[in-house]
Length: 303
Image (cartoon, rainbow, N blue to C red; front, side, top):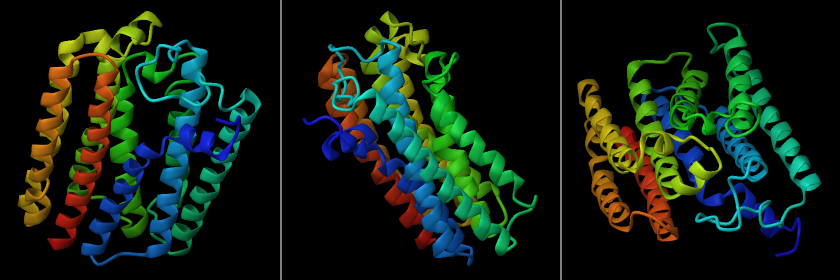
């Protein structure tokens, strides 16, 4: 692959994972639409912000995992562009800066729209704080002197920043409110998306331990990874069932279809147990996350 080519950058931003950001905004927009308060422009801006911020985080992760020794030639997971030499150090730093600026531009657009339409309770400072928190997460998930992913906090960070923050704040920007249904949907999404991190960490547990990357699986053992993966998906479906109390029958029941796919992937993961053969479970997990997002979004729209 040619250095710094378009193909190299596509590999670096990990397009297979970007659907995670998309489903978060779709779920929030569907909630707002069923509540009779939907606006397409801020929804698109929120989508842009989420995708661009995830690309930023992926690039930072690509660079710093290599610099900290986590991505070695014997890596079991998908290729990392920087570790393979497909992107130079100077280009990677420039790319991170460019995606950061683009993310901030999208965030500024969200802020200006919300202020103009008077949907904010605290005058916009809450969005500024949330934007700064997203930037901190994108960088310090793997970078800095105390990276979250290296100290057992990766799963907590994912549930927050791939669940509560994007779903809750998108709904808040559109409606000016944040109810318990939004919290339930946001947490369910965060738990489902964390299954991708869990299967990654389960696969990489031995190499992570060697480079002192103390993920939850490294800290608590392989058994935690096996049962943790199952529990995340089951808990997400159980959360959706609470939406029955709000009269959202389809939103509560349709995610049960995801449950079957999740169980099938979990059984395969347990059977394979270790090695790069687990990458098939990673692919199925990405598919299952999209399935969950589609089912929950459709269920919310149907009522």
